[in-house]
Amino acid sequence: MGFRIVIVEDERDLLELLEYHLSKEFEVEGFVHTKMVERFLEEEGADLLLMDRNLPGQEGSEFVWQLRKEGIEIPVIFLTAKDREDQIEEGFFRGADDYITKPFNIKELILRIKAVLRRTNPKTQKVIRYRDIEIHPSAQQVFVDGKELKLTNLEYRLLVEFIINHHQVLSRDYLLDAVWGDRTQERSVNVAIKRLKDKIDPNKTKNYIASVRGVGYKFC
Image (cartoon, rainbow, N blue to C red; front, top):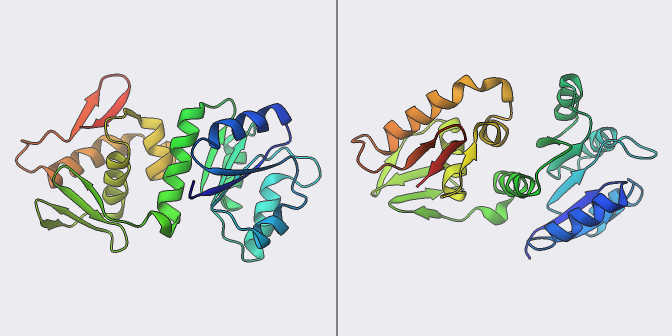
């Protein structure tokens, strides 16, 4: 399986559903409260923590804040019904790498788990190749036809997200969450994609990125 994900969710039906779907691609350990989670992380280890916030005993973001203060830097995605703007800000302040509100789409959840793992886990730091593009994540280098390109950090993250999910249509909201980490930057998407297209295809002959009207974008 490769990656181990710890899920903390007090609704047993939902926990079982998450375990069923995620176990197809990851090693999964589920808990209904935060008791024993810290010990498990210290003794067994994990690559990502999928955490509810409305939990019995200790609230989920408070638990993560405690982990951070103790030096446990495991990547965290909150999966929660707390969807007010101030609650989302609080979640990121307390250590979230991503924040997903209920109800949610299981396929999008899996995509976003993979996105966080790519950004945070050295297991994924191998050379990425697609068509005539080659990416070296460890050095954050991008080559097209063997020629190195100079991309901004944002352009680099956007390109990686597209290539990893090539042939899948990625919505604006998905890109904002996975690349920007901020849905208020919606106007930036078109500008960033145009700049990226100009850099990877200056002659406009390769048609890497297609716009899917009313849906999002696809890397071809």
